[in-house]
Image 1: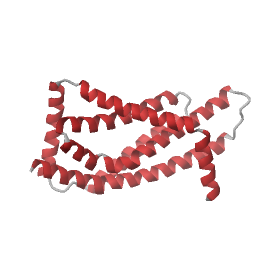
Image 2: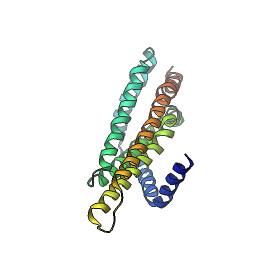
Image 3: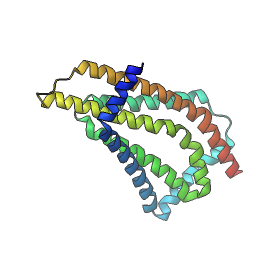
Image 4: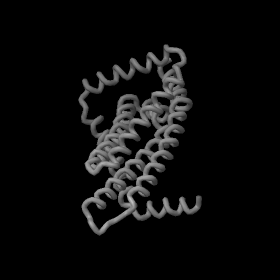
Length: 212
């Protein structure tokens, strides 16, 4: 166990630049998402907020949602997203797509929070804290780590194919890559539980408090 932890720590230290790049890319996506909110005109904001307000009002009126279905949908979404990152990691052409996906992930978070705060002020910040923050405290680090791992494995494949002096045991690297993705996916199941059983009830309480 301790040896495994040391190996992971060593890999992290050896490729710190990749992790920093992924983190900066995600932050840039968040900033760009907030910029998009500010660049929208009044009509666009009002149209989008109209549909969002309808969703909140329906949440006030409806009975308790099917948490089993919500959990299933959340887990299935994470499985699909992680599988996509995994497959991109084992393809050489996947590197630019991985960076775009992570940038978009940050953009969505930045836009969502920025739009709510822009339109609703402190109420929007409250709704963001209730509906976005709890699960994303787990989801964001996991996706950033998964993206970094996918980039690293794709780079490893490139070195194997195009740099003759590099001869790494690719099967061993693939086994480690697969195990790490499996562990990250298990963590995302925890994030889905947080989303359904903590974030969703918090959002419902916040929405009912605001709109009643």
